[in-house]
Image (cartoon, rainbow, N blue to C red; front, side, top):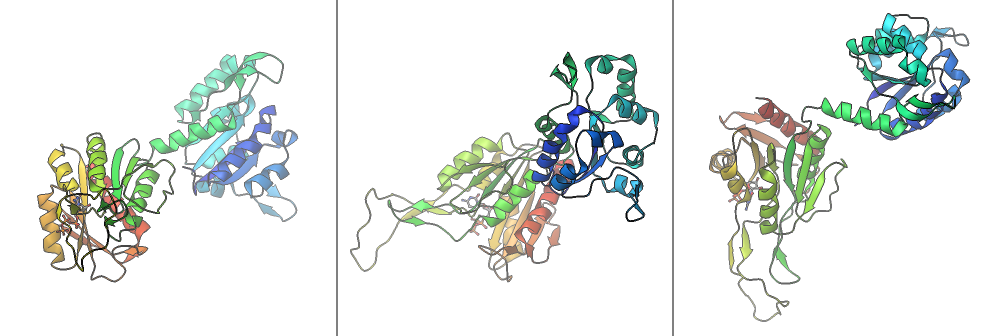
Length: 400
Ligand code: CTP
């Protein structure tokens, strides 16, 4: 959730500043770029050296850096930030924020910023309860600044009550949930299939294909990074999801993939069927390994269920269904036939005649054809970039 996000962490003069070290560490571990700005008082509670070491960035306290004659540009810092979190936020700083005071670098950055601002108060219980503090909080909320409520417990004063700054892990969870809410596919359930299916001939042999699953895994990762709740039904594949939130269901045969897809499709907003599903399966599966006998032998096969057609028949209004077509000839004509026959919203056409497209490679070259037969031809791209194009199209359809 924090990958590549620019976060300004404002630290004020409170004993809770000792928690800032763990908080910075958690943000950095989650992939954020962290710029710490401390009020002068905060440096009495925790050293800038600790925080600059953990954040891998110099810590700013003052406008001016006397050693170099440079100054820390509050406007640049405010615009750089994707989000600001002031934690611990003292009664003093909250009051200044609520009233537009600007007597230190942190407050100047706060006033310059256009991004969301979060604040996690830390103070003694009577200071917290005071009408002045509560009115300042209400005023900050009216500015759309977001409160991370303090907890109840033992306070540094020895008193017991409300006013303890939220724990670093709680603040991470809070911010993650907030960031997730803003993503374009937040809380949308999406089903993705990937990889081949294997149809057993006997206990040691199967009919399969060369699909690596790379395209489907890239799509699942991209959807998850856009906030979707992703279920990935994967045939046998060595791929692993980069996004930990992807829920993977491993299957082997087409029948197993069908069962998993049908049970998840009804609750899904969209389904992207990128698996290379076997079209035929042996009529009987030998219980023992088939021994070598004649110079040739025949395996009788029967058609598998077309999973995508099945989902197309079950599709209800508002659901988005996407298929793939891997073709070697009459590519567009065949893809359009599949689009119509399987009741799809769009189809992603790969032609094996395009260099760098298809199974196993890290790249793909696709053409997307929608229901009105509008064609978008894409360049040869990495499978991650192709996944991005496909997911953007899904977002457009969901938002329609
Ligand atoms: N598909 C499916 N179930 C099958 C076969 C295919 O769900 N039993 C899906 C694939 O996942 C893909 C789309 O249908 O999204 C098209 O697959 P493709 O193999 O290109 O086409 P087929 O319909 O199998 O037709 P053909 O093999 O004759 O080209």
